[in-house]
Length: 159
Image (tube, rainbow, N blue to C red; front, side, top):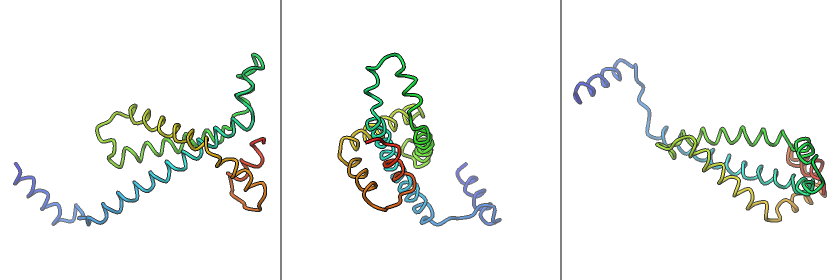
């Protein structure tokens, strides 16, 4: 059986039906996937941090004590564009995570749960630093134009 398989594969190679790829193609693809995954996770952690900062700076958590209109106010105040971006990037991260082989035999639910908890905890850890205050001061006191983030800090987060 082994010799037949080897012979059939060699025949397909000689007929140019299978292309032989260099080992470096696989290494480059692996490095690209892993670095892309790392970059997306870092961006996701920052965006989750930005979401928590938005909630804090607009006093959405303090409105719990103001009566029954809390849910209505909360739903009208949330940054849905940020939520959509976080969701799309999270789906891409899960897809790349499955492609890289980190989660070869794990179920999708376990991967989603692990990544969701890890990204949320890292976002909360970044939120506890004074990075948001420094970025807010930087964007309000300078002429730096960061397309989404600068506008978010200066116009959408009340300080």
